[in-house]
Image 1 (cartoon, rainbow, N blue to C red):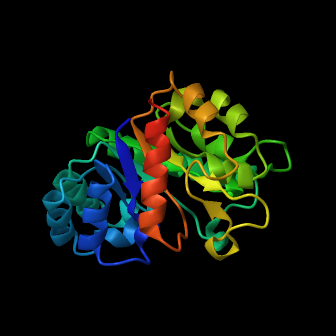
Image 2: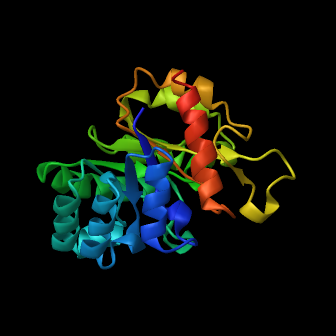
Length: 249
């Protein structure tokens, strides 16, 4: 497994130069970028290259892909991306009903066609709100993934759990769409309150051994370690890498 790290995990622990060296020292080969990372992206690319890190997957907001297409494509080309994922909707932007989610799915399908035509995979990255059932029993995730035959899913299975769903059931339902996985863990109840209840991978309640085994026949290209609020990003990176490597032993 090529270890990949979502740089969002270290957004509160600058500078990038130190983060890149720390990741390389802990055996990471790749990173994933997010929206704010791509400000002054040329200099950041140089930092990653100096540390021997590559980037093959990134998050671009819907508004960026629709409103600043040329810059998004320039970034994708510069980093040598393979996959682009739309990552999030602010609460005020989230549809209120199935019709709204279907309309968003159609919008994403149009973006996806452009991204695919440019030579990149395109998909959606979930949080918890896409797993909350609508009045008709469907979930927003279902409506987004079925809006296009080519829509991929970057599955954040810990957010699936926080959304009240069964990660294994969702994985099996949409396995053929999963091209990337955010490997994140949830602390036992009452623990890690200062880290918003997240845990280092392999040190929480998620059955990552079972989930990764279930993903063996899915078209996953990227397994990406992430923690939304680590108090110590080196600790998170190191312990998560150790656990993930142990699954291959």
